[in-house]
Length: 228
Image (cartoon, rainbow, N blue to C red; front, top):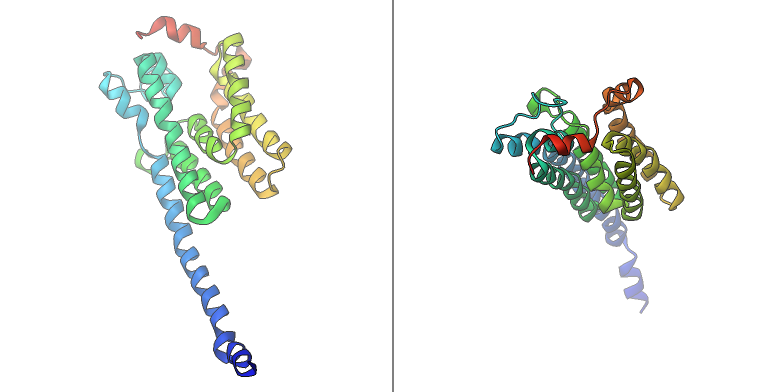
């Protein structure tokens, strides 16, 4: 019995733990940058341009010139807008979910942020992308489902009452980090959420200026001006 105990606690056993830990760190060191780069390029996928092209519309040259679901809805119709919305949601949800599966919630949040950055600043289109609302929402659905549900409900109410998607988006940007903190998520998750939402809010600066001047368009107007 003594021999077995000593054999299990000898030099070989002492070396196994550091070696195993080093291997885990080595795999993690490779997976994280690969996952972040892949997530960024998933975010750059030109959903709005591809859907708009099928309708003969270039959303970067029509309406608000923004390659996002709302502008496609305005310029190419409701169905096209819904397809873009679902595609952009997937662009945030898939990287967040896969990152979470690969290496836990920290990588999930990092991949979420990378995908949103890719959507807003796509290197494939000279860093001229969308505003990131749907992609940010997609990641939130995976990582913060209760907070995402609350924000979605608030967004729907605001759009129904004010008919302005930009106001709903800005309110969601303010509300989601608060919801994450109220739900007891760790500080680093709240910080990443705030960073993602802050970036999306800044991307709405032109909308904010139009809201202040009273020139911001409404969803109702868009629906009246496009075919279903």
